[in-house]
Image (cartoon, rainbow, N blue to C red):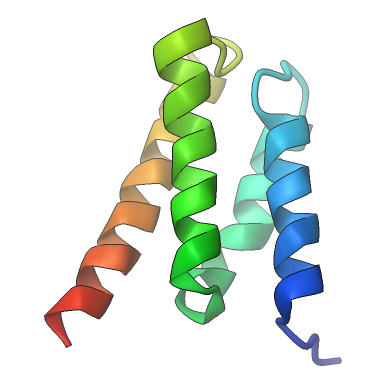
Length: 91
């Protein structure tokens, strides 16, 4: 099965990230694990929006979920997003 990655799909992914940030359940890992392989195919705009969501929640609310489980997972995801954005600028 293939999925068309268009603006509507990217919006749903952004909604999933917004929902998952701060949750202390299995949802953050499911969302991150689903989106991570898609990073090369997402628009730079949506990558920046996802990164901004993570940074904003961490900076202003300190709310990335459990400090030992969720927070490192979100920060690693943010690193991967930044790496993807940076790799595009080098091309």
